Image (cartoon, rainbow, N blue to C red; front, side):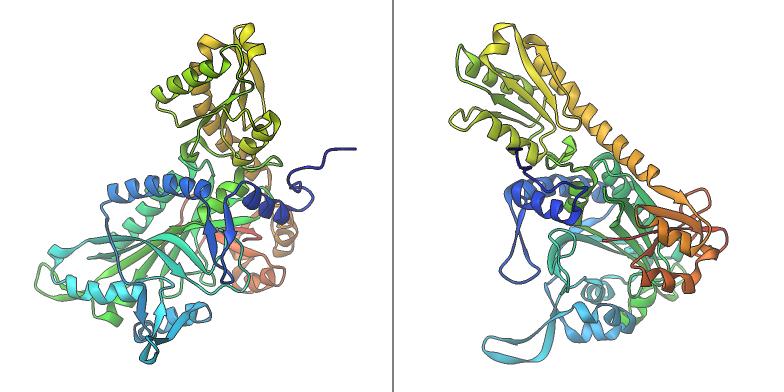
Length: 470
C-alpha cells in the first residue's frame, strides 16, 4: 500500500494544503471566537524575527514607537466620512461595559488614524515640531466574513505608522521611503519574497487617503497577496482634527500626513510563497532554528559528536538545535523538521561517522550529501546563506514565469486563472475594473511603463498589474 502524504498536495488543493501546513507544522489554531487565532510558538518566533527586521528599519527611517488606546470613541471615526464608510462593515463596537450601557459607544480599533490624529493636533504647534514620525505595534480588529488564519482574521497583529509633514512633497517622499527602504527591503531580503511596488487605483485605495502605495507578492498558486501598504493621507484627517502648525512666516497651515502598515499576514506570505508538499521552507533570516543537528542513534560516540557540532554552529552565530530524542523514530523527526521548514539539517549517525562523514541536507532543494566531519559546521554555515538566496531566486522565477503581457480585459481575466497579467491602464479604466471584479479579478497596482513607481498624480502611460488576490 502506498504511503499517504502528510499534506494535501499543492497541485490537488492549494487552500487545503495551506490549512494542513498551518495545523501540522504547529503554526496556529482557530480561536474560540470566529475569525480569531492562536499563534503557536514556532510561528510567533518567526513573527518576532520579522518584527525585529521591520522595527530596526522603521527606526532607521526616523520613526519612534508609541502606543495608543485600543478603544476609540465612535465619534472620532464619524468625523472622517470616507474613512468610516470604508471600515463600517468591519467595525466591532462596544455598547455595554461594567454592567451598564455606555453613554457613547466605543470602537475596537480597526486602525488608528482617528485617535492618533486627535493627539497629533495637541502635539503639533510649529514647523519645528515637524516631521512628527510615530509607529505603533499593536493588535487591531476588523470583523471578517471569510476568515483565514494569518491572511484575513478578525484580530491580527501589526505595526501602523503615522506621520505629519510640512508639505505634500515631504509626505510623499516619506511614504515612498517606507515602501522602499522598510517594506520592500524586508520582504525581499529577509522574507525572500519578490514584490511589485505600485500605486493603488481609486477603487482599491485606503479609505480616506489621497494615494495608496502597495507591495504585491505572488503566491505559489498564482494569486496575489497584498503584503504591505503606505498611504498619503493628504490633509484629509488634518482638517477634520484641526492639526495645524505655524510655518516659518508665522502663518497657520494644515499638516500633510501618511500612514503605513504590515501585519501577521506576512507569515501567510512566507508559507505560501515558499512552502512545498513537505511543509514550510523558511528563509534562514526568519527561521527560529537555522540548522538542526539530528542524532540518528546514540552509539559509538555519535551523541557527543552531534553536541560538538551544535556548539560549533552556535559559535558561527547560527540558531541551532541538537535533536537527540532517540526515543522518537528518526523518520518521524525528519518529517517534523521538514514540516517546520528548518533550512539545513545535519544527520549524525554511527554508520557515517565510521567513515568520517555526516549527512548534510538542504530543505529548499532536498539535496543530500555526505560531508567530512571536520568540514560539517563550515559547510552547513555556508549553506544557510545559499538557501536564503535560492528561495528568493526560485520565487522570482516562479512569479516572472507566471506573468504575461496582454492587451485586453478579457485576456487579463483569462491570464489571471494561473497568474498575473500586465496591460495598459488605458485599456482597463474604471469600467474595466468593474468587469474584472465580476470574475473575482482586480488591478493589484499601477506602475510606470518600465515597472517603476509612477508619480503620485501620473495618469498617462501607466501599466496595470492584474490578478486574483487573497
